Image (cartoon, rainbow, N blue to C red):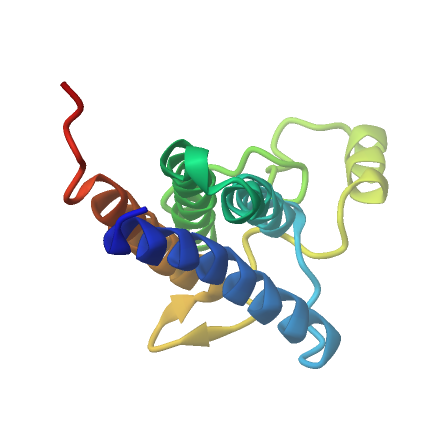
Length: 160
């Protein structure tokens, strides 16, 4: 295994693990409650850990497994950017925690409220430098995924 592929494999483990640790830490110790789109971002990072764990156990197929992990990490980043756009009012949310109530009867509105998450996807619970937690996930995840892909494909040995 080349040195850059080993670096990509390590990065593919560290990026989702660190972002999940930050998300869980902010929930457990920071009191932040994840909305539905926050969970989607976490699911993608959890999915990234599966192929990268296999890549450590079976280094023979490491490149493909690391690229699959990078795809899952990039997926979390894309969801994070979309979620940040919903928070900023740029995009319409897809979930009940961000749905609008226009055109609903009183009974329908009550049902929507009773069946929706207590935390709205449109609310920013935490931000740093004006960027929400979802936005930071998007930045770190997409940047990490691109770096992983670049390292994975760098110095590829061409087989004849």
